[in-house]
Image (cartoon, rainbow, N blue to C red):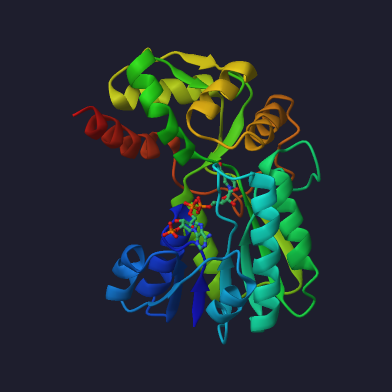
Length: 296
Ligand SMILES: NC(=O)c1ccc[n+]([C@@H]2O[C@H](COP(=O)([O-])OP(=O)(O)OC[C@H]3O[C@@H](n4cnc5c(N)ncnc54)[C@H](OP(=O)(O)O)[C@@H]3O)[C@@H](O)[C@H]2O)c1
């Protein structure tokens, strides 16, 4: 049996689907029976509960061969506090369950203990799981998600620009979350790691935001779509308008500063092992479909 935390999310959904397609027994974890139902129809067992509860995590991971673990994002909470609370519950629950293998979702930049905003919380979770001497743990450290671009679609429609707090001309590795899920499922079934390891996943190549605007613009039928770097004050205002917790706003701004200063950069040289297939041009087709559907 395999447990997938965050099974309705970007990466967990793919992990669960890959395992089910391979004919393997899967326990999918989330907060809603209804959202987990599509996996149950394909043969999965559903576990509904809250991963900030260590007892629930222990039950969800009981008797399984491997766990896919992640800390869900909660922008409407104090994110760093939330990461600490959930991270501790996950580590305690996994230890109590006796699960022998964990593939843990971390991030590029998790080599640092500071200056990376939410990624500091992911580094702390790597440290917690590394304290589990009986458990073999692989920390996947993916690049920035291409899916983050969904949050920019409204701005493209209303202002005619791709506007983000990222620098325009610093090349940044970007990955489609589908490729993370595929790799996580592959490693959960191969179990080709022992002890505690990290593996960066760097997408197909690095992109500057100027290039991103050109690729997205071409896909949505706005070939001259400009890129505008949003200054921190304006980004803070926009985040507050989205209902983000006041303590979480500076945490996110720290991450964007980390990208701008090239503090958040991969450590592994790019190789076949950390390069993933989906290009931004391919991903942009999905983005364009969402853009046109929203506009209809
Ligand atoms: N965005 C990036 O560029 C980036 C880059 C590197 C790493 N990361 C990290 O990636 C992680 C997010 O991964 P993801 O995008 O695959 O996840 P996601 O899409 O945010 O999904 C997480 C899932 O967890 C479930 N969930 C939320 N709160 C829960 C709770 N209290 N108890 C149980 N389940 C809960 C939700 O399902 P239900 O609503 O159905 O319960 C949700 O679908 C974060 O740790 C983030 O820091 C992000």
